[in-house]
Image (cartoon, rainbow, N blue to C red):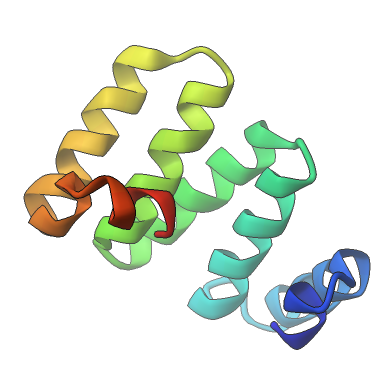
Length: 102
C-alpha cells in the first residue's frame, strides 16, 4: 500500500500479485490490486478483481468500486445496480463527498 500511495504503482502491483500467488483470496491484495488496475486503465481486470473480492466479503466499498468500473466500460445498468447495493449496505454512499472518496 505504501508504494501505491507514493506513486509507485508498478511496484505495488507486483507486490499485490506476489501476495495473491501465495493466497489467491487475500482480501487486502485483491482490493488494492483492483484499485491499481482500475487507475491504470484496465477496467476489465479491475471488474474481475472486484467480483472476486465480493465472493469473499459483501462490502459496500467493493460494490461502489465495481460500479465505477462498470460505468467506465459503459455498462451503466449493472453499474447502477452495484451502486444501489453499495447504498443499501451503507447509506452514507448517498452523500456525494463519500462517493468521491470510497
